[in-house]
Length: 226
Image (cartoon, rainbow, N blue to C red; front, side, top):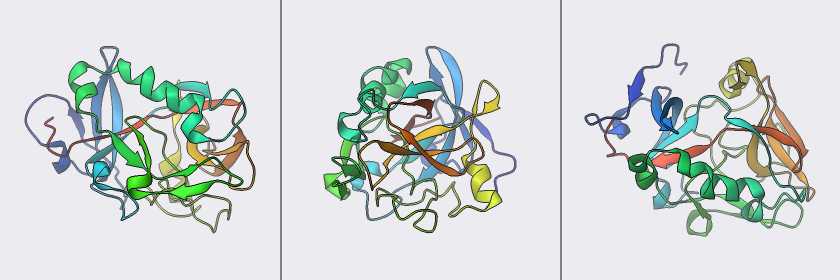
């Protein structure tokens, strides 16, 4: 389904966020400024996710900034600079009511990084509140590369594969220009590459020590009112 004309919602009191259509826009305040977030999924994406992930998935519409994934050039997500930054610094941008409502989730991930790592899911997922999406969640599959870890399932907003429509759903801007952005997925065949989305919505990988776009994602309870 293509969402041509998404509705814009603002945090207030009224409609439960779980009733909002996938593809619609929610505005969350960052440092008191309203910012657009896309509703990219409602509910659990698959059995790979435990109950903590049941809610409304939001992804920042535009890239927030360019940032290094890990300054030590290691693709181990759980000890990465980006994961620490999102959950200890970035989260404080939100108003208190949003910050308190964001769910503590356990997201599928590749423990101990790419080469030699282990895919974890369900109750063994990585506990966090703010996170990057995975390659699987944005629609990349083994048809694109066999080195995508099995660290999630496609979210309803995205389209599987590498068609023009699929790529367009992944395009994001930084200061008005399409820019590449990080995923949380390490390249499964080495210890330093991390998968990413190119400016045109294709798959790519960069050294973890490179600086590229960050699009934070989070999950709110479905009964949170907007």
